[in-house]
Length: 129
Image (cartoon, rainbow, N blue to C red; front, side, top):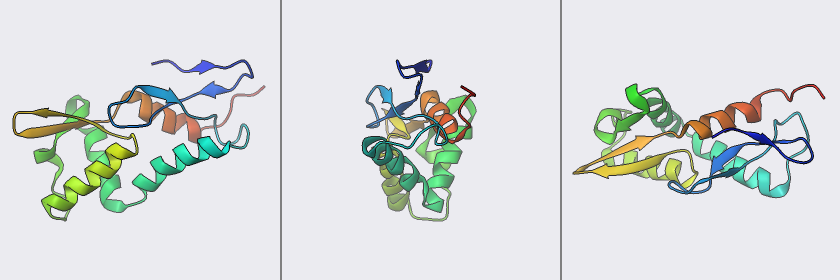
């Protein structure tokens, strides 16, 4: 999904509201203009989910896994029990950072490229006017 510029010239960044929902615009780079209350809520939900070291490790494991997706069986060695891994993966899904697909008895997780792009652009500098 490509990013577009709105009428005001702001870059619309995709961020998932729910794990399997289509991408919706997020917000401009932080140094371009102050975030609206709605943009701040959406963005805070993403960063809050990543604020836990176990969730950050799981997110990183999925994002860096070969093929862009990982079976829960391949990423669950993060020093906590399997039910705790499931809890953290659910939190990442609820924040729109991961999507999942059940294949037989295993669940495969993926980070949508649009999510990584949105997070990167949010923290990047705004282009010169």
